[in-house]
Image (cartoon, rainbow, N blue to C red):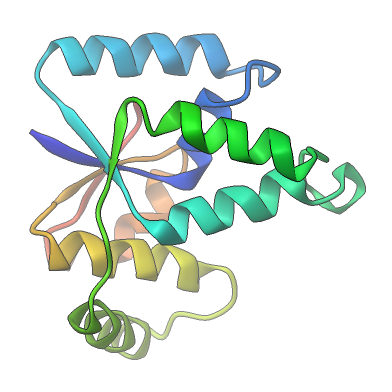
Length: 144
């Protein structure tokens, strides 16, 4: 099964210093051996870069850009990248209008739009509740 991976999972799986790192890597490996194929989107990589390089005082990881780059390159070994299209934007706009999305939740809407564009209905996330509004769209959020 093809499964999208949310930025919060990528950040912790790609950061050996994260408390959840080992458990997430283990869970992803088990799922991979069970036949799951993991995908992500450029928006997730941009969000990962932003959080990774943001100062710790501002709720970031405080990494140098070179460390963020290394994290993304390591993640690319087990997560395929799917690209957005013009249609993705139209889906995103419909989602944010229809669900009255505001603030940082627009990032999740963008992930959902890309998922819908690519026919992906599952996402691994540490915040399944954030994706609950998209259940009517056929999106199922689950913990890794």
